[in-house]
Image (cartoon, rainbow, N blue to C red):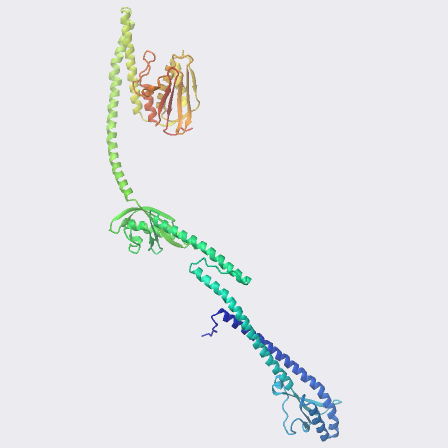
Length: 612
């Protein structure tokens, strides 16, 4: 197991420990470097001492060696060692055979120490051992063994180490004090920050840190205060949004539920629980089992398609299971809610109670069945009535016309063949009988036309009413070419309807205008149209006899006349025929007039498109 050092838990302790370690390392480096410098200086000092002492001793010892004066050489070495005791510890001279000639500073028979290899060894031993040849004119006379004292250097290094350690201890102590005070100051601000962070984490976003002290501390406190304020606003908005969502979820007026991807309930509101009859989603069966057996399969397919991304919305009318084992008709809507990471979150199920609607639909179906039955009965009755009407029309057309034709024909023969044998009164009576027969024949024609208008099958098509009106006017002018009537027909008045029926309507309307302007000077007839919100309103205007507007409603009823027969001929069926034609086209017809001021007849056609 790998060992890991345990660090103090306090930031202040860690700061002090780190600073002390750094100080110790730096001081250790400084001391080691100082020792290295001292050693270098010691080496240089030894070399300098040797450079000064060896030539001097070499020059002074050679004469004694040449004269083989051992006593003098011994005395010289003793004097030299005693005078330079601080620098020289001992001096030993040997000949070329290694025999000692003289010794100073150590016993004569004491073995010579080995030469020193490192200055550190010399400092630790207090003496630097070195050997140098005794040379004169490139002739070697022996070897000089020297012991250079290093006690001064050792004492100097010892004093330096002692002072360095003292300075290091003082510096470490001062650092600990300074860093301890700084750590107390820093941790005090950090403690405020920690306490504020803990309060913010607990939901107290009103907590603020005093913004004082160093610039960095002020910036940190200001940033945390801003963050706390912004978090407070966001949390308030989040709580409001969550409350709004909860209110909408619970009071939306429809049953809402959320279904997890594993097919289990996540939640549902009270309306949903009321529709199912369960108090909460823990008591309810799984979503897949809440439906009529005939509806379960399509619900499962819809849920799988939603979670697979095949659909985004699904809706259908289903039967949901009740707590009592029954079923209720509901309108089920499914939609998928995705998480912000685009993963499927849950399916939103909305249920609307349509039990009453379904009951109403069932009643409507019953009513529709009953209505269809009644319509079939009425259609059959209408077909029978139409057959009877057709038989009546046939009877009128054939059985009633034959006597009238006989009466008209015989009276005409009497007038033509026996008018000379008849008195004036007799001729007048025959003429009246003839005219009455013709009027009765015209009345029968009008009644047949009225019946025909109600029964004929309509053929709708686009047409030009202006062209139909011109055709009718040409027929009227051909029937009475001596009359001079001013005609003004607006060009290209479009409409959609049955051309035969609309021509009959125009024949009656324009025929009335032609008839009731017969006694008017400068007669004038206008056919035009004007747009309205519901479509085109067609109008036929004349400056004829007019009528009392109080009796306008009687105009469009059969056999209703507002003028005497002696003034204007007619059957009283024409405007009734117009009314039926216009109503079959989904329109209306009305009139405006004043006696002696002419009349205006309006009509609309709403079947098809006759808009401008």
